[in-house]
Image 1: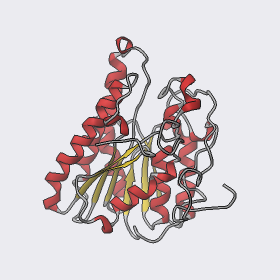
Image 2 (image 1 turned 120 degrees about the vertical axis):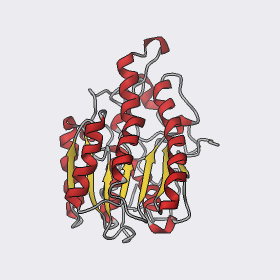
Image 3 (image 1 turned 90 degrees about the horizontal axis):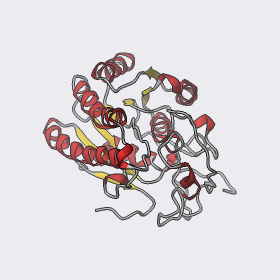
Image 4 (image 1 turned 90 degrees about the vertical axis):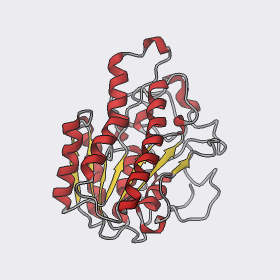
Length: 300
């Protein structure tokens, strides 16, 4: 970009963000934004708040990096206090996000935990509500993705971790959040284009994302009469640490995102407005919806 732009700047979507010239690289799990090359735009400089979430209290799981970090930053700039969960090994990224939230004059609550157990997943909800003085937005974003070239090599441990992180944790956090969420509150679940176009090397991950779509629609039907809206966001190829810690085959990284209609991978900041919209009262008649933010990949 030749000039500083925010999410409201009118521009060609093909070229509005810096091109991601991605080299082959790898990181140990869980991966860090701090070590990514090139650096993704999470909205640190380019997201402009408009007061749409003033006074709100949000919990974002997986909020230390990638899409979750972009959502946490955007929520703070829209006026919300934000608690976010992350794995203890991601502390470096978590400190950065916490500082960005606090720079907006909002409260940041770091919640290191592995939410693959019911106790931990429910625990961060209780901690968030206590620290924030309540809770009215829950973003279920934490995810686990590993590329497995041969289906025969998919291990029981990987299968369990993927399902525990991606879908079972959503059941646990959402159940616990109902102890705190008032009328007008929202739950937003991160799904994926993989729910519609599963890659042969991500069958376990894609299966959980399809389950999240169904979970979102079912929970939305249950909670709508209670005044709580549930929706989802389905990202396409977004440049995050998930891709370099085994989420993609290393040799495929230079072409990551290029098959999309826009011809590029997305930056995490490009997801943030969808979450802000679904969290804000302006989407009051949007229930059980999955917003696809995928650069033009066809979906149902």
